[in-house]
Length: 216
Image (tube, rainbow, N blue to C red; front, top):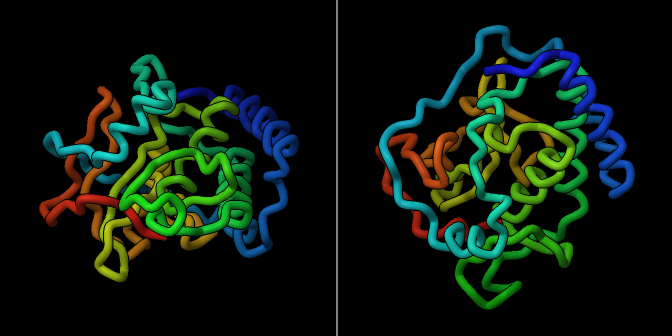
């Protein structure tokens, strides 16, 4: 199911007001240079497989923030991209990356892995992505189409990103870059992500799953 262009135009206006209030608007030029016209015409989608074991810190996060983990199957499973929606996604990704101080959970909280919304202005990979999703969801983008995802990064370490499932393909929001890449362009090995149907996780590949995403 997809939402209409007019619905997402309204969403874009709401997002603009929201990120203005929160000081999120004002992405750097490099992110804004990613024009809507440059997006691929043929979507490239990640294929979800069987059930996967969730990250333990995600389970604890969901106990404290149940709304952030709830799955509403009446929501669209895909975001209908428009130029306005694309621009606001870029702005949120870039500004959150600039605004949150990157620090490992061990240095920050003296625990191997902890998920939250970077309420104190600091966090590691998953905290960046959860904050981005919260902002976008409050503005009206369907949370169901924005899935927390575990990958193996360029260092061979567990890392968390946010997958946006759209009608132009699956795009990745990442705290390591303010460029929003298609999933194939990240160079990551995709392991698993939140299900779009239930509060659970699904496999995206056969590689061994990391126990944590304790990574800047």
